[in-house]
Length: 324
Image 1 (cartoon, rainbow, N blue to C red):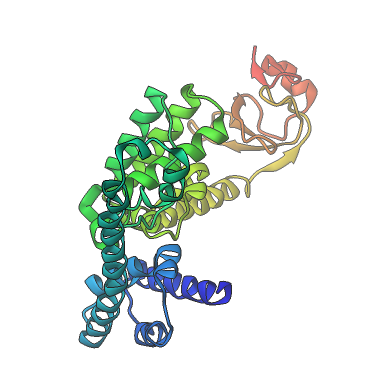
Image 2 (cartoon, helix red, strand yellow):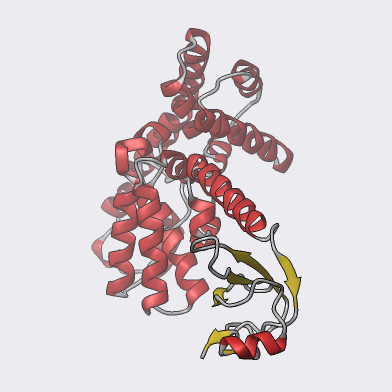
């Protein structure tokens, strides 16, 4: 049974990825595998494969895929209908023994105990694990806002996800990681809500809804990790450009240890001399710290490389690297 359940779970995950990527390539093979398997109601509930097949059916434009998906869903629905019929039959059958007995026998606990497991029978058995319950007003409000964020653009309808269950699990993971409902907790929840509602990043929300990103993962992801692929590429390009500009800024000039950076207090510097006035005026010296990137202008009185004696004639402190 465990081997079969793992195989169905594997197929369901592959179908979810197809829905996320909007590609049905190979879907027919997976659906045929499911059709060949003897699937029970227990397997349907534990693997949630029905939701995956239904999401694929709604998204696919392939008539063969749609037809086979409908056939599978119809056959699995018969299992659920049969379970519902048995539940209703049990519900009608349980009062019969008590109605034929004398009223004096009704309070006898030994007569009622065997019937207790039948009492909570319901027409439809949920396919989701129990939602973690909390009485904290702040946490419940955060769950409501997370639910609304997951329901943005109604993607959950096509995927068949339970947004209340997902939001409760995400909030539970955040609370366990932070440990309380202080500002860190609230900021963490706000950032999840903002990214899940982002119209420019719908893939994040869809991945959470279909299970590609688990509640445990979304609860601890950074802003960079939650960003859209487009934004990640922009940030990557900006980082490369900043590194290139920084490297270009350090290519010119002469390295020296005669200056002390006023920011990091190190002497690893590079200086350049530039003519900022007319040709008969002295040049200006610009210094860049090679350690922290700090820049400053030293003086306008020397034409050659600076020395300690020249610096003092400029009125500059060589130990500080700033104009006196």
